[in-house]
Amino acid sequence: MLRYLAMKKPVFIPGEIYHIYNRGVEKRSIFSNDRDRERFLLGLEIFNTTKAVNISDLSEVEPQERISEEELIEILAFVLMPNHFHLLIQEKQERGIISFMQKLGTGYTMYFNKRYERVGPLFQGKFKAVLVKDDSHLRYLPHYIHFNPLDVFEPQWRGNRIKNVERCLSFLKSYKWSSYQEYIGGRALNFVKTNFIFSLFGSSQGYIKEIRDWFDNLDLDNLKEVMLE
Image (tube, rainbow, N blue to C red; front, side, top):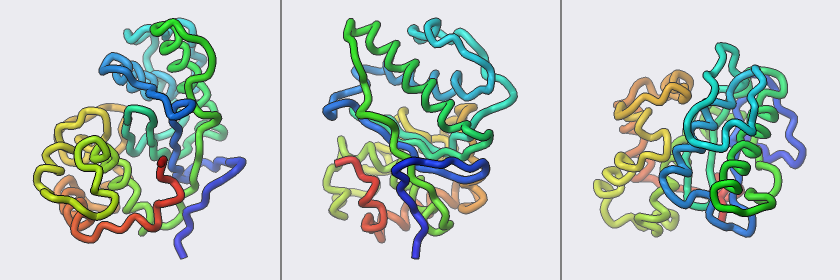
């Protein structure tokens, strides 16, 4: 039995891996354009530090701080979609994920509200967290996270009805707002830590092969509990 445990009240343990996700309140868009997405990516880097960060100074895209050597978490994979995001995270410091996600959510909401002259919460409550304890299930998660952009390109993929695999792979390769490019050798964002996932797949070529195999044997039954419908 796969140990993929959704937690109503998460208790995060250093060294463990968690699938983190959230979406906009009332399913609203949380990214209006590339500037917003760049600002969120900046948050993934800038807030991953045990140092205090002055959130009020981070309402603009330009970085105000540099990440410290002592990180709260490791980001293994991510994707940004119009109204939600997914992260695959390993806890490094006690309460690291909680601290990181509080800063990430608050900082981005402050930026978004200031830019679009709005007030109130942006996200649909607290972020959701799922503890990942089985290696075979962990192999699926990066693929699922990286396949999310197909929702806007080939929505039938979730029903295992993909018309052209090569076109789908080409689209994923061109999509800038996920860590897929880090795993196929196309880019190297310094806040994405690939070593752990590569320990499962061996290399970029190994990951690409697994992606193709997953396309051929697509089965999302084990991941239904974390799909944001």
